[in-house]
Image 1 (tube, rainbow, N blue to C red):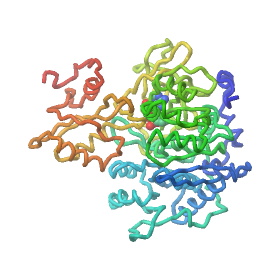
Image 2 (cartoon, helix red, strand yellow; image 1 turned 135 degrees about the vertical axis):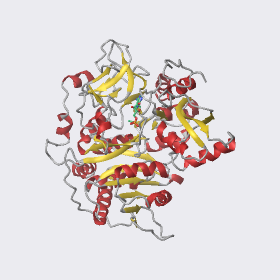
Image 3 (spheres, rainbow, N blue to C red; image 1 turned 60 degrees about the vertical axis):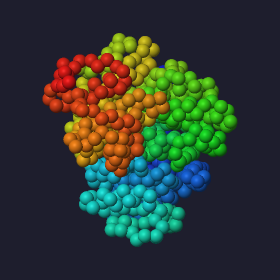
Image 4 (cartoon, rainbow, N blue to C red; image 1 turned 45 degrees about the vertical axis):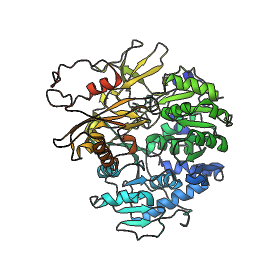
Amino acid sequence: MFNIGSYEERVKDFSWSIAEKELDYKDGDVINIGWYCTDRICQQGKADKLALIWEGKGGKEKRYTFNDARLAANTFGQFLRDQGVKPGERVCLFMDKIPELYFSFLGVLKMGAIAQPLFSAFGDESLKVRLDNSEATTIITQKKHVSKVRRILADMSYMKHVIMVDYDGRSPLREREVAFDLESATPVEDFTCEPTFAETPSVLHYTSGTTGQPKGVKHVHYSLISQYLTSKWVLDLQDDDIYWCTADPGWVTGTSYGIIGPWSLGVTQCVLDRGFSAEEWYRFIEKHRVSMWYSAPTAIRSLMKAGDELVTKHDMKCLRMLASVGEPLNSEAVIWSEKVFGLPFLDTYWQTETGSMMICNYPGMKVKPGSMAKPFPGITAAVVDSDTYEEITEPGQIGLIGFRPGWPAMMRTYWGNEETYKSKFKNGWYIPGDRATIDKEGYFWFVGRDDDVINTGGHLVSPFEVESALLEHEAVAESAVVSKPDVVNMEVVKAFVVLKAGFDPTDELELKIMNFIRKKLSPLAMPQETEYVKNLPKTRSGKIMRRLLHAQEWGEEIGDTSTLENEDD
Ligand code: PRX
């Protein structure tokens, strides 16, 4: 029997108080995610149950019980307090998927600060703009990443503490740096959590839009209510599950469902801190007897590419549930997974901003390969007209996805950018910026994004951010960045570059430009192709028309070009 029981029945009498009751929470009570994920689970008699099975590079393995997790979070929390970090301050977590990342996340929440996880592969510029925006007072990092912090620290007067979790004493610590070693620190048994409430900020995740700098999505402790219940009903997490969420906590999936969801349910999870390899992934599942696996379409397509035979070399019978998020899950991937694992990947649709799953396939419900299926109980979702924002009731018509605001994990604002936050609401709907259709049976089908943001391998890339990095190179006069099709990543980044006079469009120059921007951006945002052009299509008001370049790359109709300036060129 699945946790959700009957989807239709759940929809009929749904209230978020179901989760509140299960979590013993009443309106106005203290609610702290860090406490819920550790202390409460220990109090329920699961102190000795495994919380984390971790594998790192070189086959290193570590195991932590829920009591270990509780102590580690306490020890981080206390250390931050001792440093003088105050509730409400932003603490950036800039680490690989090491155990310290998971426990410091909970420690930050326990002491009432706001966790700002950032993907450890970010280059200097990507890191700096996100820190400048949040004005984080503290960054927790590793030796291997500290050089990036050091290069930008001089311009960051707000940053008071740079905490290194693996300092080896080989070179002296610099100004503002301090070492903290979880393994040798005295575990803090008694820690009084900051009494945080439903609306106390918890996590700040950065996400990219088409224009402007990345936006800091502010979440609050009450998000737990949605994350707990969706983990229970969609991922169907049960007490004896071994769960593997492949996402990095630098992204929202890695926190909502790679920390908060499973641990608030007291479920054991695995983490693999290594690059992708199909062979490795199957070995990992087999070795740890993973039963519930939450991944992403690009990874699934990469596994498909590695072939069916590889799957048969491993015992995959431990798997009982598969789910996916981050980009469109094509029907071929669902059909393939049914063939090789005997289970479909259940597609789930949501965003950094929504904080928890919104439109999902549910265990026990009919899967239509290629469809995101139906809104989570309690979520009012529709497809709305892009001009009037009125609901489109006719099945099959394309429109913008719209959600009625009010679920617990919804973002509360964009950090320091209330105006953009407000612009996401139209006619009473929150508009996530994606297009979809709904069929006669109420199933949602993803059509595409409604902006120029590129979704490569499940990671959103702002064309603006890449263009800005390109423009900083001395040879680049203008640039436009769009997506182009890709078999595995669905889409990848392509850059069009207009050179300044005096520079020749050579391969050597391209390499120099790429090396220049590599230091600034995340590897995910790097263009896979660069094309030199003499000029870029622009509107009469001078705005670059990425739409045209996009259409050219995807072999689509170019559409209305009446506003085009250099139409006759
Ligand atoms: O365009 C949608 C796409 O990813 C966007 C959200 O990206 P992000 O905030 O980084 O969060 C990703 C993980 C929650 C959405 O606006 N997206 C996400 N899930 C799906 C999807 N597109 C199609 N199908 C999905 N299941």
